[in-house]
Length: 87
Image (cartoon, rainbow, N blue to C red; front, side, top):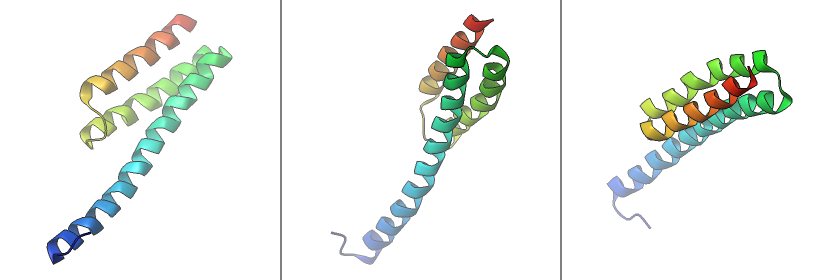
């Protein structure tokens, strides 16, 4: 357990940051899920629209340090390939 004041402060900071990051990751997953649901239903227009909304969210995760840029690029690439296959 943290003994020094600086270590106690660090624990508080980590708790706040963890909460924020968890919400951001949840938001990204929600957008990705919308794309996957649209693809599975076969609705190409809805899938394209969902992808256009999901891509900036995924990339924002990169800038916030939640995802590695290659991971995000891979996710976007795979989603766009699935959306393109519907057309």
